[in-house]
Length: 106
Image (cartoon, rainbow, N blue to C red; front, side):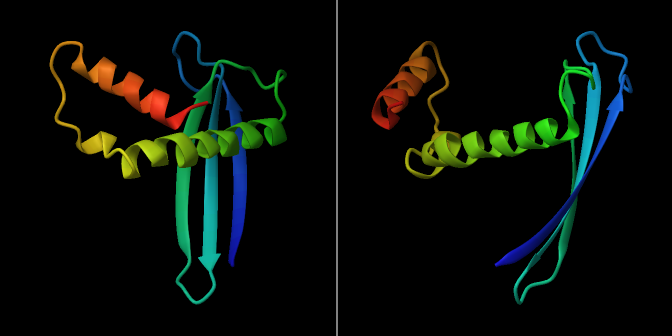
């Protein structure tokens, strides 16, 4: 079991870029049982302004991103070794991706 403490800082209009309304910094401290504590800060930007989503909604969206990353991408990387693929020319990469999508399913 691990203890995870997270803080979320939301700032409006920090970046001057078309389409970026809100920037986020999430600082996490994680302490797995019997292991040293790890710390990380991650950053994100969104086109939503601070009136469209609460900090709790933004935190849920960030966690939801990892749900996708940990399921579909994990299968692609581990089962199909997609990151190690040497298929790069022509339409072959797209065809291989289609076959992987078919095998993984919805």
